[in-house]
Image (cartoon, rainbow, N blue to C red; front, side, top):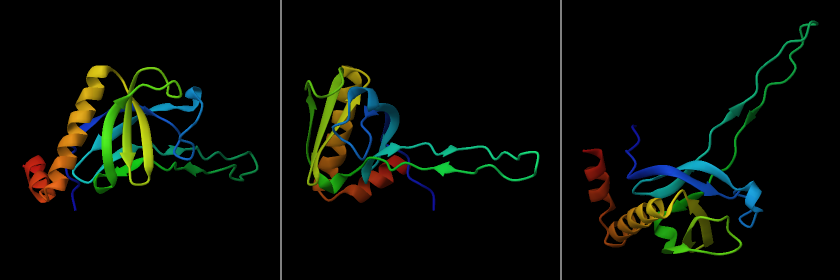
Length: 140
């Protein structure tokens, strides 16, 4: 099955998934996409190289996979811009969900407005029960 195209894609700065109140230096700029189901963070998988010693033994093979931020559209209560001293400086995005708030930082205020508009559009379509219509529009 092919994945549907994304309504919006771009980079935002996000805290580590396991620590929403992380220090500013721990927040990382990563890719996000929005489709008719969710706002999803894209995490690249790191792979370590396999190395052989002179004796022929394999040193280490490791794949590191991090969990990602995923906000399901039905879980959204509200979305707004925010400015808070606990957030890294720039254009703050607050997504209040049924599971608690999610804070992200857009690259610019203009970019933030694009994310706000897109999330509100998808949520409005969801609330009106027309997600199948949105899915068919973005795939055509």
